Length: 331
Image 1 (cartoon, rainbow, N blue to C red):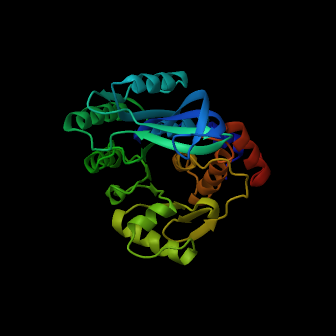
Image 2 (tube, rainbow, N blue to C red; image 1 turned 90 degrees about the vertical axis):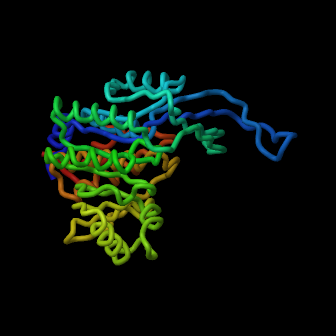
Image 3 (spheres, one colour; image 1 turned 180 degrees about the vertical axis):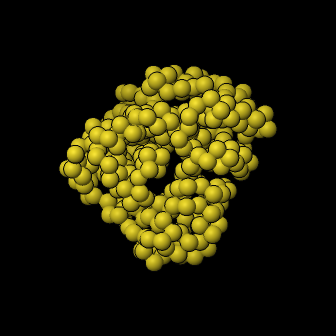
């Protein structure tokens, strides 16, 4: 492992192209003082509304938080929520040049109602159909322009099954990466799970592989190794990383397999942890770390964001501190 300071210096020189579904994570917070007389449900007295970057936008925010330069490529609507999303990206100094707006789609918003830090209800506003031919053409043109004009160290697919990453979009973007010898990291979802061919890092979670593989999978080395082999046969990827929630992370480089345990923490909210894990793993991959090193850092970062309520990016200083105290010595 490189010295911590050197590692984070490397991160700050990396440029990552993020392709996927962006959204707003909206939080309505308040107090519960009584039950509704109309139905046996609590009445939440609204106190605050907060909009946060979600989905692939949260991945870009995580990359930026560690000093890297993300280029976010997605399609959103032409609505009030699109204006809010673009404004939030600009406030975080994230580029919007490859965000396509379409009058034929809604901007995805996940609205969560919270009281006393408890999740009461979630309401989703979204379209999940694939991009139109025009939308796909415009987005791919933006991706090609970035690849031709910027030095891109890795392409990261962040899929939430909201339609941006159609099978054709995945294939055409992957071919652009392969032609340029750019590594690919994938955080897949169910709909096009096996469409990601020849990626460098394939990072599903346990729920996703259970939903997509034709046999029972328990979080054991033997079951996960069998699952990883099946996945590799289907997609031809190089590295497997399977997140196991509180059971840790399984890794497989084709020769060696291991489960890295998760540190015991006080969990406040697991939302966004997967975004953080794929972000850190992708930076580690682009920086030339081993699969085990990538997973160790990702595991810590994912655990840290679970200690905070809502979708939040990793805290760079907190991550540095825990890396130094837990695994490494600064030299």
